[in-house]
Amino acid sequence: MTQSVPLNKLALSPRNVRKTNVDEHIAGLADSIRSKGLLQNLVVSAAAKSGTFEVDAVGRRLRALRLLAKDKHLPHNWPVPVHVVPRDAATEASLAENLQKIAMNPADEVEAFAAIVDGYEANGMASQAERIANCARRFGVSDRIVGQRLALAALAPDILDALRDGAMTLAAAQAYASHPDHAEQLKIFTREAKSGFRPHDPQRIRDALAGRVYSLDDRLARYVGLDAYREAGGRIEADLFFDDGEREMLIDPALLEKLATEKAQAEADHLADREGWKGAVIRPVTAPIYQSPPTPKGFRRVWTGSDDVLLKDRIDAIAAFALKADGSGIEPLDTHFVPAIEDATATIHKPLTPEERAAIVREQAIKLRAARLATPQTEGTAFEGRAIWPTAHYIDPIRTGPDGEYYVAMIVRVDRADYEAQIETAARQIDLEEAEAEARRKAEEAAPSPVDEPTPPEEEAPADPDQDPNVNDRQEEQAA
View (cartoon, rainbow, N blue to C red):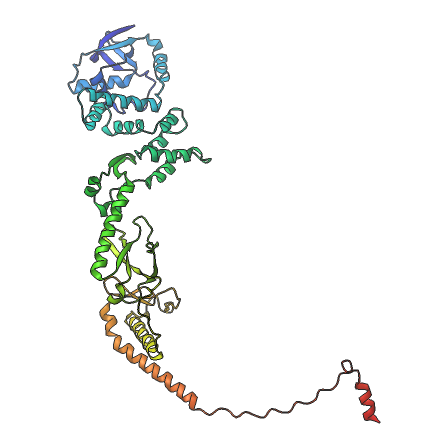
């Protein structure tokens, strides 16, 4: 039997079978009732006190109505439509009401939200944010929840159909919705559909799509700048399914990489021109730190070496740069590029004389010695007995950094002033060692050679009768 009962004549029934989560989202339910009215009657039975009733099913709606009355959105005697059942049938009615509920298919639900939000535009709500807020208010949910439903409704049709057919979980659909581009979604969806191990795994989907977007704090985003990215047509959208909060992401990765490359190349060209290089190349902005820049055609890569490249040597060489790890700018690399084949018209260099070659070797030895003398000693430290000077050919003994300081093998920093203070000492030590070596060489040359002893004459070996067939005849002749 259906009738109306004043709100203040209704009480919660101990026979209601739903005992858990009864107070969850009551405020949202109250907002929904306020905007759309009470769409479902309360199931009640007569109480012991005449004229009062106990709510055996749909008790959450009673709690929501009381909240509306408390906030003065409803009078305390507001007539509540109810369906009255016998008291002895109240528990069965409560159980039946809860068991017969069938949750909506997630795909149907998100499409319904999208249709409702789109319908608000016809009523004059031009702003998407305003339409989302209005929908959230009318259904008693947060703006973020409505945004999540719209993102799911905007999935590529094939993915939404897979969700509708139960071919994937809601968590997998949310992972696909973390990237708004259908083409990118379908690339991963097609691959996942063929996976023989846990197809459409949410974490694997997110990991695959993460490389196709950039976060706001990525070094490329910091280097290019959000204003420049937006001015070039770049899009920024919220990832509504990022943990428990939201994050904004740059969803045009190719554009961001293009802008970063162009900016880095322009800065590299400016620095190269200022420092006298022929030109500049940059390491790809998405490449790992161990990757070298591409070698220009007609050039070969060489290490910059222990000293800065002289201006006369830069004129025909190309400098190499890379984007810094923190995105604050570019930095020079310890490599550059020189012509692979000298021009036929170039001046032919004559070979070095022994004296010139010796002078170069001496200069290099002095520099290396000075760098090692300027390096903090290891005696009395944790490195004593374990530190060595590397001699492998692929390790530079010393080389300069971008600010002019020296780096000595063993990765010990040496300031330029300490290095230069040891130049004279190193030169004296080298000269002394060379003088000692020269003295040893002259002493060895002046020493008399040992007298050769005469070699005794070789004795004739006895004949072997097994090897000489005439030996027996000779022995007989000697005996006669």
